[in-house]
Figure 1 (cartoon, rainbow, N blue to C red):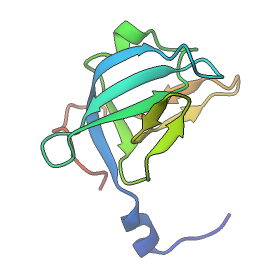
Figure 2: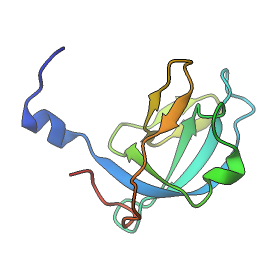
Figure 3: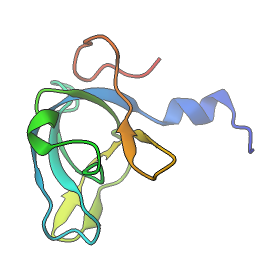
Length: 112
């Protein structure tokens, strides 16, 4: 395992946002959803492609808070430009479980 410095960790902006919309990303090579996430006034709305269809139904994601990296450069994924990376953990079967706060926090709150 490579060790990092505190300054390396500080560069990654992991923030909380609320999923506003979630729909099937039909054009994706692997099953995924297109998400629009609200990160509050300072960051705004960001789009993301999330391969979380094994566990989550699109309708159940709306209104949930998620943790995402918001300072990656935008990445073209098929016909969509992904503007943040929603985070999660792989189970043994490969399904992704979202990393989420266990209590509501303001949109845009940064991981401390």
